[in-house]
Amino acid sequence: MQAAQLLKYDKNFKLVIKDIPVPETGDDEVLVKVRAAAVNPLEMLIGTGSVKLVQDYSMPVTMGNELSGIVESVGKNVKGFKAGDKVYSRLPLDRIGAFAEYVAVDYHAIAIKPTNLDFVHSAAVPLTGLTAYQGLTEELEVQPGQSVMIPGGSGSFGQMAIPIAKEMGMKVMVSGNARSEQSAIDMGVEQYFDYRKQNYWEHLKSVDYVIDTIGNKELNHELQILKSGGKLLSLIMGPNRRFAKDRNLSFLKTTLFSIAGSKIDKKAKQANVEYHFIFVKSNGEQLKKITKIVEENKIEPAVDPTEFKLTEINEALELVANGHPKGKVVIRF
Image (cartoon, rainbow, N blue to C red; front, side, top):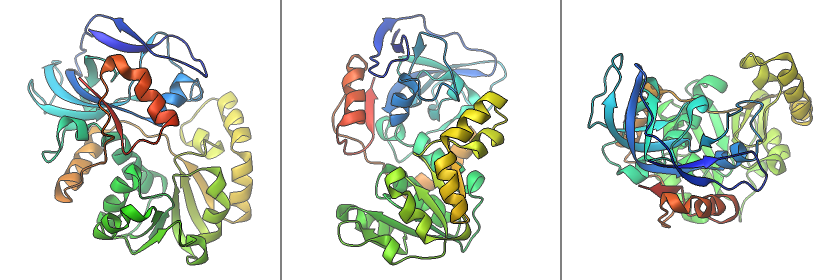
């Protein structure tokens, strides 16, 4: 089978298409024939070696973190799945490999794909869906009636986070572009700020939580609107001491992450808020809940119209890294 592999960490890395054997499945694994695989900014972090303190790979490694496809065969301990099932997954971080014709996946990491979505759109859901779900439930531990602001929430993350937060009984505010305002309102946001016309930090205060999708340049504004004791969760700004401690990382890694996150932690402490960073995990049970939310809300994630084949993986990575994709970039098999 064909697979797109990383041969070494490099700030200008390129993936190489290689012919490798179809993976053998373990007792707890299913063999999935990949139909679509999404390309994410996470690929850049892995390829450049930026996350090797969290997860270091033996080379060569087949890249790709999320996919949709059809179950070909199942291991003897697998429950709830059979050959022919249409599934999707955020692959376990230590066993990635979506950029290949077949992949062996622990069955605890997969779920039946949403019935309202084709394979291409299904492949665009798991990573953002699980990020939103785990961010709200595990990192922020939100409660009904609380408020969350998502700066830059008009993109693919907000598309999943808004309905999940609403399902949890939250008050949701978002800033973003003008063209996404109506769909956000339709999903139930209480306030929408067109970033070209309004500065959300001039209108909001004492918000319980902020989910950051923009990065360091937005940090001061995000801290400004949080209540004392509130929490800031970033998908972008990087790990800190709390991240290392929560994952029981080694003393060395904890020290390195403490240094890396010290500037943000200092600012957060001055504002009397907690700073959290999320690195999303695979979880089939949570993915089932996301499937239900996608189906009930008829969510269709935005997918960039450019059609890429596996042999065009480096062009797809370039679009994600330096282009302006109109939604999730997807490899079609």
